[in-house]
Length: 287
Length: 287
Image (tube, rainbow over all chains, first blue to last red; front, top):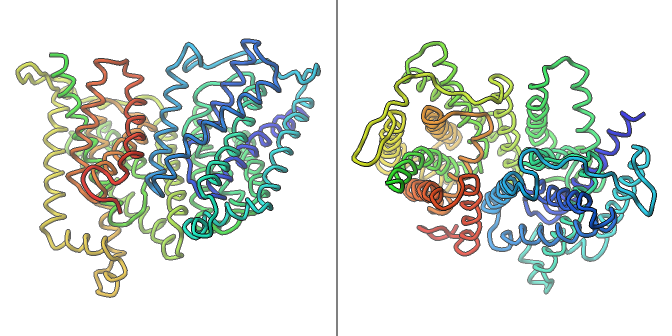
């Protein structure tokens, strides 16, 4: 049972991350490979606030959400000036700068060894030490994110956002505020990443820079692409499916040093295979 | 004197990164694929050479093994992945995601075969020093400078003055016209990928000879190189090479004023500012 709950919680956390990435990459067409950096900022913020006992879990999540939303706007800003491949390079750069900061600002982040002993959240006096209780928290947060995503997509604003990806110039010519739409989407995406980061830190009670490096960005992207970009279902299918995969790997005997690279190799192969044979993913729309 | 030595070391590394930049520029300006898997070929080239050397091959033989292996990898990636995708009319985003997948497969394949530990060439001569006035360079560093400059000159000459180079530029500027005038762009793209991959495999081997190699370091090198390609103006081989030198020197000199672990972050932060202020590059107008 705890095995299943562990899987469920992690899949839910990464579903929130996939939704966050979906908004940027799938919906509005900002190809960001620095989502793990925002995820990490959320995780470190919540971890530090809880470790210093300054705030309770709900308040810490709110701080992380606000901070990540603001930061994601800053990271998405170059996309207003530079398009396509140039932005990918900037985004790669942002991710590497973030990793360098996580590793090197050791007074704050604990450096390469990370932060340990992050307390499990207590919500209005109820402890969530039990995995079942934590699963409730993560399910609620995922439900809120899904609802937010769904409402956003079927609103008039959602239509503008879809239109921007297809023809930015036409949207601007129709008198819609492209800048405001992009900034808002980046903010919502950052907020999702902040929540996911906070959940991740409190659930594992241990974080280090390798949990938020470029490899993780690519894994999140893989989840999105395999599940299918642009749809709500895709962002849920991808993480649940891809996180089941490592458990499958546990069944074969592999030396522990190989497991990590092997998993990433399979993710890479999946990326290629899906792009070649089913670019819309399992439950998505055509890329 | 410290500054002179840092300057010299920067120029040496810059030469090798220049090769990565020039080869990336060649591929990018011809095939229009943002070929991030180039970093994977860089890594694979170094490891193939190391593998040959571990069987007692002299450096030239090991180098040639690395070059041939890389060129073959490049040909396979172009003909089996990029070309098939393009025949299906895939968006640049789809190609980019597939390329990220190839990168993950190559890097983790290397990690599985050779472990993630640092590897070094065991040639005793590579650390022998040559003294030029106040500056000392190892044999490995001298090799890098000579080989890099020769390869750079040959590549520039090839692209400017040979019939083959003219074909490349013709296809790059108008693939459709090239197709109907029977310049056979598909064959040409494979050839360009082979040349680019051979050069980047050589760069990987050279840097590994001077320092050491690990499976995941290629991304950082490629990122520096793409920055040089963009800052130098897309399509300009000289621009890419010169900016690589400048970036590397800057990064080395910054060691005198800040700890090494921050200098990489500083370089990328500088680049992000640069791309915001001057997205068209230093040398040529934006495309």
